[in-house]
Image 1 (cartoon, rainbow, N blue to C red):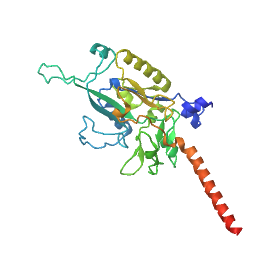
Image 2: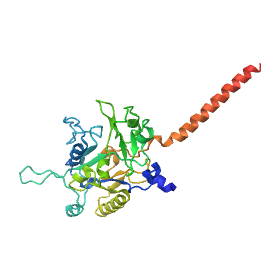
Image 3: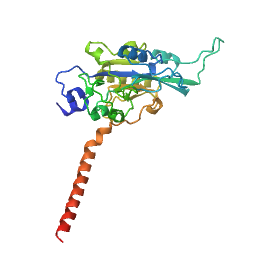
Image 4: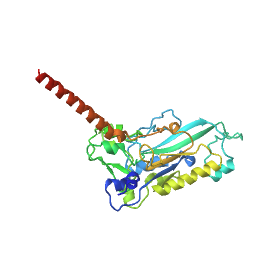
Length: 300
């Protein structure tokens, strides 16, 4: 195994020999219409229980965040309007328009704000903090490069919750066990795409080999920039970031913080070796000092 393979191919680094190519999600938020078909499909296929039907007072968002009972979460962000490309260009690129209609008055819809919508999900990191800290082996790396929780092995310790730099993984209140997106591991093994991507009507959620998705995403950003959408950017696609690159990455139309994403995520266990090294040196120094004091007293 080469250093490059160990850096970018988590399945190979885990010990899988021959295995399928790493797969993941590319979420193009510029074509998300906020329909929540992904949320519904995820819950139906995986048997994820409802997480309440409360109105949060946060636009059309009734889930709030990812959690043990929300493996997909559609973010709704309302912003003051920004200069956009001509409507014809936007339509050619598949960019949705969310002007409010004039309620049957014949008046033009509102153009003083825009919606930013994005379907969030577990990132299936190359260097997964949740996987690093799990003491029971409940979390494991699959042959597809994704990270899956085995609920029958989870003891509910919660270490994985604090080990995730994205705040994705969560425990259910009734039994304390951790739950999150599995990338529909059961569907992958039967040659099917994940339920959320299958249900997405605009192809905002795209599934496939991760290398191909990164190339496609780069072309999409270039096309948006040429059309005047200068704020388009990719998030989580780089193997050189603080988690080694995400298995689920995004095309955003604003800063990550606007979507509730950390601007510079870092796997918490990244500095663990150096921390243990410094701790060991400190312990050795204390031991040496204690021995010196003991020998000094004995020589009196």
